[in-house]
Amino acid sequence: MPGWAWWVGGLSVAALYVWFFYYFFVSPYGFRWRALYGEVSYPAGYDIHGIDVSHYQGDIDWERLRNQGTIDECPIRFVMIKATEGANRVDDKFEYNFYQSREYGFTRGAYHYYSTQSPAADQARHFISTVTLERGDLPPVLDVEQKPREQSDEDFRRDVLLWLRTVEQHYGVKPILYTYYKFKLQYLSDSVFDQYPYWIAHYYVDSLEYQGPWKFWQHTDAGSLPGIKGPVDFDIYNGSFYDLRRLTVGSQETIGVDAYR
Image 1 (tube, rainbow, N blue to C red):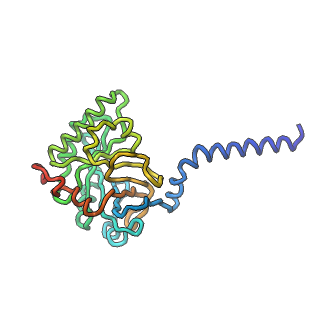
Image 2: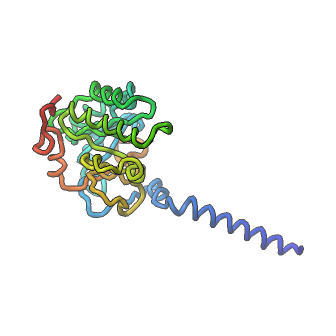
Image 3: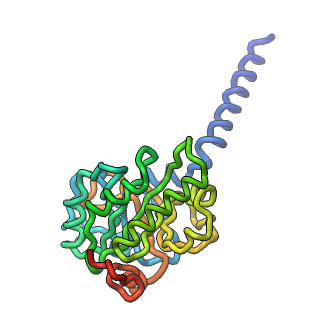
């Protein structure tokens, strides 16, 4: 074969490889790349913004966050804080973040990361023994993102519901259920879960594909704010600030016999 044919063949293969890589690995995550380079996409039509944090955010400068932190030119209204994981782990920054967020005027909430390695009842008791909610705090949150491989779908749903009902009985409010939308559709689509406020994780899209009711939307994990080193999750609330406050412990919507434990 002549030399030019080898060049044409090599360039064709290279071009095909570049197209393949872009089509399958870059294009579907275009929002991700733009977010990482400081171009976070903000969902249109929502004014109530918040964040969720854990030890991954390190030492947060809460004063700077309060005075300088805005999302899409709107103040930060609420902060979700990781409290516990599994049956015995407490987030290293929970106590400090939970206290400071209230001191600096944010509506705060606490969440539990569901583990596939511990019984649901033990996890619920661990959260209850760790977290004391006060009037004005958001309801407790269950963050569930994985299902035990050896567990049936039916048993998994039963265990998630056990955590929710145990925690609800203690605090007197319905917990918030956090998960990404495909996981909910696959494992937690039963109507019994619709009674719990839904916090949906769905990144780098202009609008949600999920068709059911929801309260919160975690729309990116690549946000940036003064007072926080590195990326932080951005969230919105589906309603007004008045609606958000009515969701809190002690409001007319959530008050229960054990609401102030």
